[in-house]
Length: 322
Image (cartoon, rainbow, N blue to C red; front, side, top):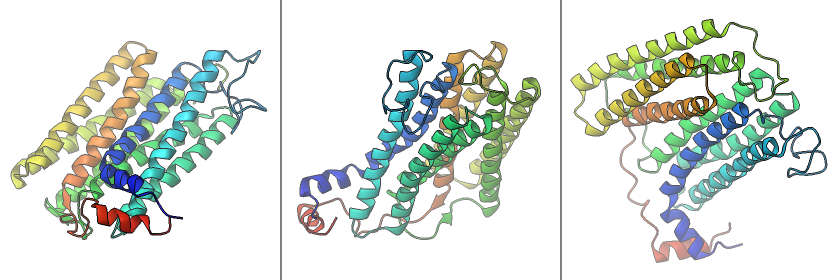
């Protein structure tokens, strides 16, 4: 089976734009998941993969309001949208010539991640929104956001081994910082699990004091900020790269905004809209941290043979088996 030339041409032409869309979609589905939770719609579709027994879509139900059904169904539908975007980026990586192993691998991870998230989402529903399944669901999303940033970067760089643009000690600091970010996100899921927004009124909560969990979450944020401050002084001392410096200040702005939002959220009793904004900020923090990570390393320029698709190039691709 051959691939139509017009399709291949457009796919390769917009490959980086599709990768940007994937970053947004992977982060966006976490935000819509938070909307499901704060509206109490987590069991709006009480079964999986169907919404209700006998139907993939919402139908009138005596015990479930239509709003809850459509909010949950909308989140499930968005998973399909993310899957389509991931499928397109895999297809583009497969059709590209030369076929770049790292790009294809990162694309396949995204597609596999969407499938994994669908399964985790199903387990979350079938177990009645157990708090730890919700935490895993969110953390996997944040991991996929990070890898989507790496995928987008891979399209604009070469295939050489990564060369540090900063002293190795600073790259090690970034590794530790990424670990701290992981624990920061994990602590955030614990705060949510013990807080008032369960996703459903009958869902059991994590039996730990919210105040203590919020303090741990805040302490990890201060640790992250301290490491970021140290990294900033080092970047100023050892690098004149404007991209690297800009990425650093973007991360500083995102983290400070997220911290301020978290404090307002805590002081105002965790209003629903701020929960979703905080999830959006978590995704932005992951994107900004990953952006600084890739800006601190170089894999060389894009190979010269990886050129924008020409008519002859597209014709040759179109004649190959799909």
